[in-house]
Length: 104
Image (tube, rainbow, N blue to C red; front, side, top):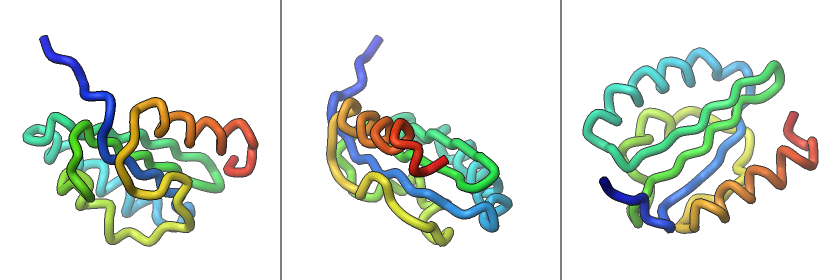
């Protein structure tokens, strides 16, 4: 048994629906990649007006290759800038946006 480090690399992006097909294809590629990247976590939330992707890598690796399949897909905005943070800081950043209702 092992524990997840408290700090890692995180980023959250908002995409427009026009890129949903590209995002779904990238998710399928991501599923293959995570077989060798066990520190990668992806949260994928799709709604009618926006798609939210949250990337978290439980190691201090900047711009991890595990998420490479998403990096070239154009996005509308970032709700969490790329960087190192705790799991709590990353989830709090997402909660602040979702609770404010400004995204959905």
